[in-house]
Image (cartoon, rainbow, N blue to C red; front, top):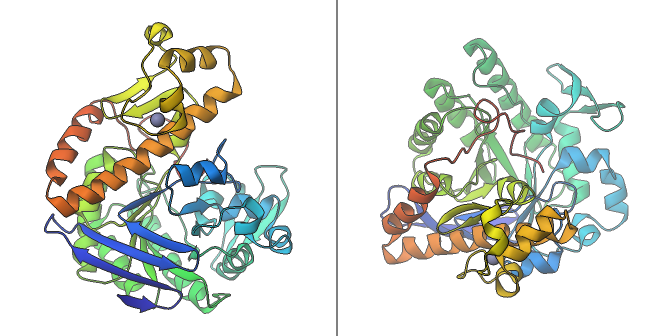
Length: 391
Ligand SMILES: [Zn+2]
């Protein structure tokens, strides 16, 4: 086990590419990896209680700094005892730095070398985030893992712009570390560089030489193709070599995406997809995705997935869910979300087990075959959906 500040971690190779099995020890509990983190953008994984998340066996969840800082504000959450107490989740929490949302959600941004000035998407009020303020906000929230403040850039922009944002991200990484607010909070750096191999290698070099507690891969799941994502992950994995720190792929988490990323050495994922698509009636099963709004489910007495242990699958039929969605009953959103989160976390447990017992390829083939055909991992260019980093 290697200890780097507020978290301890150990990762062991599995013989499957660069895939590793590991554990991260935080002040609020252990995270076995590879693992997926449900997204609780506004101090809530939409429609689920902390008890639901424990039942789904969530180990760590994510909170969004941008949203929480605008409302109810980090200072208010701190006065109320910090984010764990505020939302009554006693497990580990990772917060992002707000960088992604500033660049994807806010209006009228102005970027300078010191930080970003933007107007709130809620009420048009003016705000400013700098590396120092992003770290202060995350210290007030009291998450177990904080993220360095970074500048997102569309990888389709001219190379000079991607390089410029990357260089700024590196300067901001140093300032984020210098501004770390509390000794019990880990800080992860973020690798940028678009889908350009040379820039990605430069970013790995710049970020990995800093004393971060973990390394995140940012700037993906923003409109690039699956092959670009995979190629970028390979470049990053090669450049990181045997760096012992946790590796987190930001904003990625569709069933078909986990396996390739794990094979490239990724330990942590987050994505709004399981919760967001659930609210449209789309549920994930071993046999692929089902759309509960489809009329064929109105007479289907089977559970969503007979192998799933969630409340929706133990007690309710597809027909009932199909009815709830048609009637726009609130329970529809809750049960579908509970199922998708439970199923996704179970998939990650099976993935970990498969790495241990040599059946990874088999599990991968089964899942990918059912999700490859129509699955789109990405927002932006592929399906015009909003980005997958906040819900
Ligand atoms: Zn279920």
